[in-house]
Amino acid sequence: MAVVKTPQESRIGIKVANGTSASGAAQYKTLRFSNVKPASSDQDLFDVGASIGGLQGAALVAIIRTDEADLSNE
Image (cartoon, rainbow, N blue to C red; front, side, top):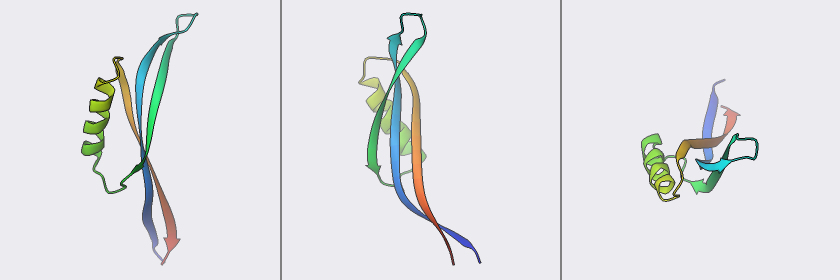
């Protein structure tokens, strides 16, 4: 039997710099957006993440995509 993957949900996280702590360690803030279409291409999500990150007034550190899917036997 083959395992079938059925995409369910995707999310995007936009990590930006958020200053430094009292000890001098870098701090970050992650903006999270859910209900992203699982069929969205990585390039499209990267472009959106870069645009939103550019509006934050802080350095963009990372764009994170999280996908969830159901696995079933067929």
